[in-house]
Image (cartoon, rainbow, N blue to C red; front, side, top):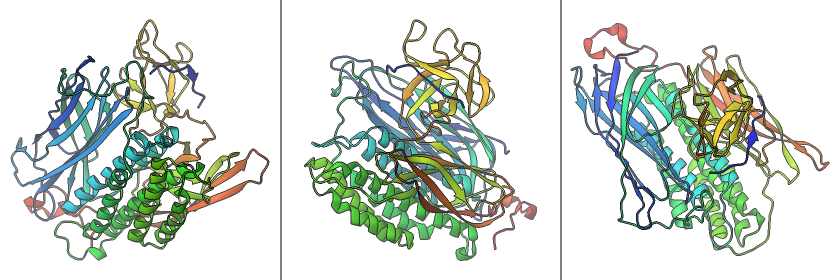
Length: 578
């Protein structure tokens, strides 16, 4: 993990106790022994009645994203497990089952961290909603695998910085986007990108609708059951295991079509007249657009990767264009089918590695989820990618037209994959073992291993002056005689801010994050906006613009019922659903 030194420019309800028992089995390096990483959690204890909805039950769901990077092989494992169960017990301390979580992978060399992101919810939605959440998460993982982990063939690897930005932008834009905007799903707390320590880990969950605690245990030992192809002393750039075209296609597009088939079933439990429920219609539109956009980004990535010249790759261009036409017309199934074939052609051309004619794809501005359901007092990220730029062109700035009172946009550079693992708390908001993208940090310096710290780590650029996070601070080193703020690592995880310093521009890959902050001043309704990337040419050419529509669907809070339904107290009922 050695890195050269570089600097950053400026820039309630009652508690719920969740017991998740995770076992992680891995070994120290040996000639014939490698690590087995296995995670499992099961068990949920409620301290009070959580019943809601027409059926008088609480639909409790727990989702965990497991992330692990075997740095020696550059092998990234990301799994999302989402399980749910219903109950109607009204006894404090009742124990639920059926929330089993499992994750398995392998690694070699020294210990590499396992990070977990978890969310606990209560819903009055039908089970199809949980299926949609899990499947969309699986599509994002499939794209991560295709773009980063093993897009190699006899020709050239398709991974690298661009792949990290594409995958990082996707998961960043998706993170919690449905749950944060939908009033029928109550947020009982979450943790985000937390490193597991060996032994017991207790994570406090605090959400707007409840709170809780997750316990995750991490144990380790050696196993000689298998031998991995490990490269001694080489971290971050070893050969990758190839993923063939069929495997890559099957990791993305069948799930995309499955979600589109599930969209008409999205509804509240036992709710008659769903077409009259504005929130349900908004949710369906948002899910449809997000999934179709995922398919487009996957296809566009490999069309652009192959443009340097692989035999037959240019055959993907008309399919990509056709998919975008269907997409704009609202024919999502046809669009996904075209994107699938464009992806297959371009990916296969790279995989086969036969040289062919180079080509220049048409200019296009892609927004992940260009129709998005949002709510007041929330933050949302949109992945933006300006494609078809010349060798001397770059994005000068991005503008959003049509803004209303209560919404504020700002633009961040492309998402990279460098972060610091905090070695201690930075009060009041940043906790030990959390991941912070270096793009959120200014006035810091990354140093390699030294006498006080055996790994690359983040320190103050000027001793005693601290660092700034999101422009706030200063924050001072929790370990000034050791690793400063903590180890600096590479990861493909969902990280807002990535590894690009605040204020850095331009991004050579023309990728950006469009961040949106909403306040409660924003009235319910449908808002039509236009996002424009202004392109500058350092080679003397004329500047130009690329635009894309952005639709925000703002629904009023709309939970059908709140707790207390079974008591018969009508004052606890919501009244804003027709």
